[in-house]
Image 1 (spheres, rainbow, N blue to C red):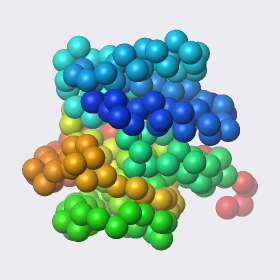
Image 2: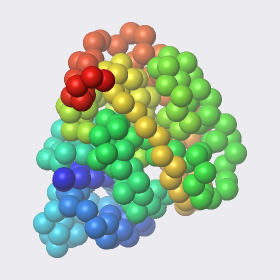
Image 3: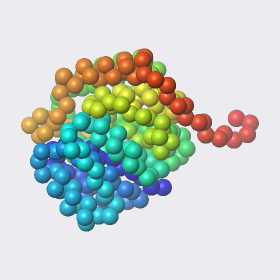
Image 4: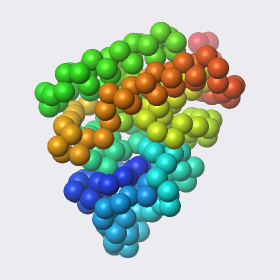
Length: 243
């Protein structure tokens, strides 16, 4: 089993090298695909140096900043693994959680796994209004997808390769989270949630997403649930005879 770790990067020089060290320390066979989205700091130089020292790290680059969704799209197109996980380049999400995240897929129970920050894992207490916005967007998304997720906006979305091949992502920026959610629901993927830890940043520590990003996310929920084109259904796994 090869795990493909997709790391979108934009101006993350303060945390990037430590994040990559933590991903490398996870005892799983993996490739790490880093997509530099035209960073203006030293992120690309760090990626180039670290990749030269680690043959399992590949670096892709956008010459013009396009957004997190575009970086994820570029990364997913390049995967070679059986399972893909999206990993932010900051230190809010802990790569040690990979074992928990891929468990339902390896057991044959799930096609997609969301890591939920609201199912009981340890997390930093902060930014109440971000919490409210997240819960609101998750609620609206659930109304249209008929899923009962607790954390649609989580970074940690883990998918079998067969799911990735059917996503055909369009969103360039932060609307990618509801787009992925809508499309896995429409392809009738088996979706699981597992609890994860979370060490959230504030704006002084480099957090980029703000309240204004909620409007594109809301639009993405409506667009990809009501007006988007068809999504190729995911074939159901073989079931034992008599079931």
